[in-house]
Structure formats: C-alpha cells, structure tokens
Amino acid sequence: MGDLRLFFGLQLNDRARQAIACAAEDLRFDKGRLHEADNYHLTLVFLGATPQEAVPLLSRLGRLALREPFRLKLAPEMGAFRNGSIIWAGVEPCAALFALRSRLSAMLRENGFPGGDEPFTPHITVGRGMRLTAPPPLIALESFEAARVTLFESARVDGRLTYRPIG
Image (cartoon, rainbow, N blue to C red; front, side, top):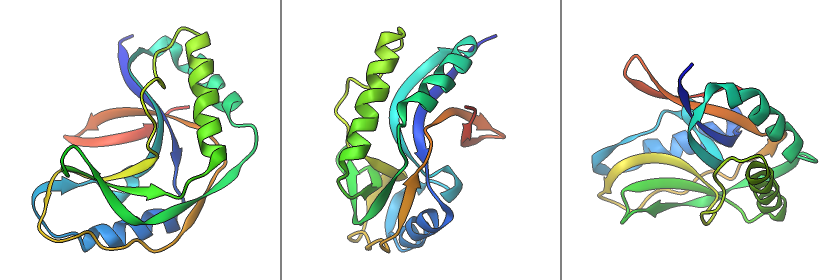
C-alpha cells in the first residue's frame, strides 16, 4: 500500500458551488486555469503524503472534530494569494470554523500527524496560475452547512486533478 495525498476539508452544497462557478465564469484572465466546480471545497488541514493504513484513524478524527454543525456564508469578494496567481472565494468570519480547525489540528498532533500549524485563511480555490486582466466579479451571497469534516484524497484521474472524499 502506498501513500495518498490527503487533506481535511468541508464540502460545499450545490448552491454555494454554483454561486462561485457563476462568478468564476466572469473572471477575465489571460493566463492560468479555473478549477472545476465539483472540486470546490474549503480546506481545513493539509496532510500531504500519508500512508493508506492511516485512513481509518484519520476518518475517525474527522468525525470527532466536529461537535455541532454550523453555517458558513460565502464572502462576496474574491481574493488572491501568491502575487495574484491563486484566486479564491472566501467565507465570512466564523468562530465555529476556527474552533473546528483548531480542534482538528490538536487531535492530529496528538495522534502523530502533521498539519494545522500554518496560518489559516478560510477559502475555496477558484483558479491557479492566474493573471487577471480585470477585477474579479462579486459572488452571490450563499451559505452552506458544515455538517461533517471530510477526508479528501488529491489525485490525478485521467489527467484531471480530483479531490475525492474517502472518509
């Protein structure tokens, strides 16, 4: 069994994905690529290369980390990282989200896993390698429920980057 490229995240509902995808369609750029809407998620903790044998324990930790479901609202503005090359949609500030991330990070450390030490800027990646030629459009104000923490595998399937829920 080999290593899997894993991370914990929150899945979006269809309305939130659609709101981001509609805004992304209006992005004007001459370089880069957009993520596909079915890949939109909010990353909580990136684990990286992880032994496949760890998936059951990691799945359990993800279930235990979320004490109560809560709602997140998309922020209307898009933002950028890395000198503007990564375009993202944000979420409105939410204490429950930061508490969830902190709890999950602590549980991972207690069980010998890395992750969660870097600063946390909640976001949904919309595109990479971008060079925008106009300011980004606004996103429709939608919300989604954080009802469970999902363990994702990041893998290439038929040459396409996919984020597959595995736990």
